[in-house]
Length: 537
Image (tube, rainbow, N blue to C red; front, side, top):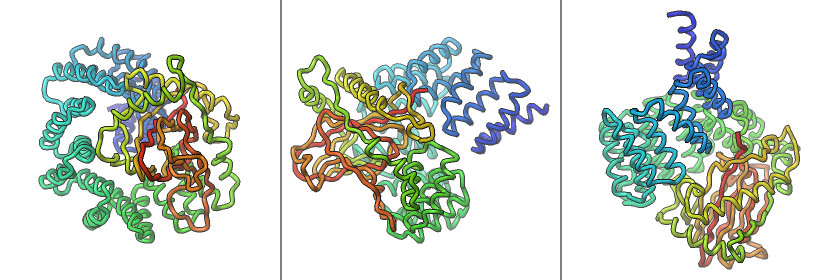
């Protein structure tokens, strides 16, 4: 093996060990010997992607394909990256090229199915995945899993369940299949089957780390706190180096109102895995709850080095700054400057915004068919649509997207310039939607306080509101409220701002702003269409 081959193997080993910065360093060194090597450019791109640099990742994948147009691993990674970040036309072009290169392989059609599914074209996705299955030489779990997901999109829950059950029976550590199956049981029933797949798999693999962790995570999400704590404690007694269980133990102890015990668990998790953003942030929050804002800020800064645009990091940074008397708190959380109510323009084919919203409310109501709030979202006493709302092909949804995009441009045009501000420095007239959904809240419904980790700019559009939500209500029932992190922080009263919803209006705000809603009483539905927006790249 030559020295160059040894260096490349070192880069691959670093990537596999999740040492992405080291893998990047090794690849950049290798490119000095051969700047056109597609395998090196591919590993470099994947390393950059894992370091939250998708634009740089795409540039290196395109460079690999420029020098070697038939380098299929780079093309497949580029397709996946484009789909993940909403560059659907570019993804289709690369899929077409891949089909030309590999017409008899299953992967081009598998990726086509993924793209169609992301676009909300479930029928076309099913045709593509069936085509992929025909190209297989032997059964493929990932193809079967995607087929199950498409059946879910088509509301064929019986077939979804059958395929996922077969997958977890044949491959007891197929975590994605377990997650999808239990999501199905949680949202559509039967509830008594929730968590059964994990338990059955653990009978076969009782020491499986991923199975134990995901069982504990699902118990936590379902509010089974004592069971979660007991499971984590039993695992760390046997496997003291498993950082994720120390972290999960800390999360559970925090929810059980035992912050001192939680701190020790969080500290152990960070000690074992300092490169985990989640571990660092949760330790920072625990320190804030103890009033240790200086120490908390150090962990927040550690996250900033790994991911400077992490929205949770920015939210906690602002709180630490406020507690420490730093003027940057107001600089980050300038509600007057950044929270704006923008009216939507009425489409020409409608007589009024009210008539448009009435029809839209009817369309969205038909999409709220689950019986439970989502397992891992902020909604309480309400439902949330799954998938990308803007991928829905209903004409009125397409009109809504255009209306919000127009309002977003109006908002962005009014922003000042500041190359040092983490929100303003990303200002770009070219934008893309990174998520869109609908929420329907009923009596006592609300959102817990949260941020939007996948966004840069967020927006909530109000479609239908109960009559009791009014601008003169001193209790602010049903209003959207900003600035409250939802936790008690000693010596700190968060600065807050609230806006009364109005049908036909959007409220825009930076995605790192803590926000939630105030519960309301009485009949009626509060139907909204939130979305996240990011700069185009």
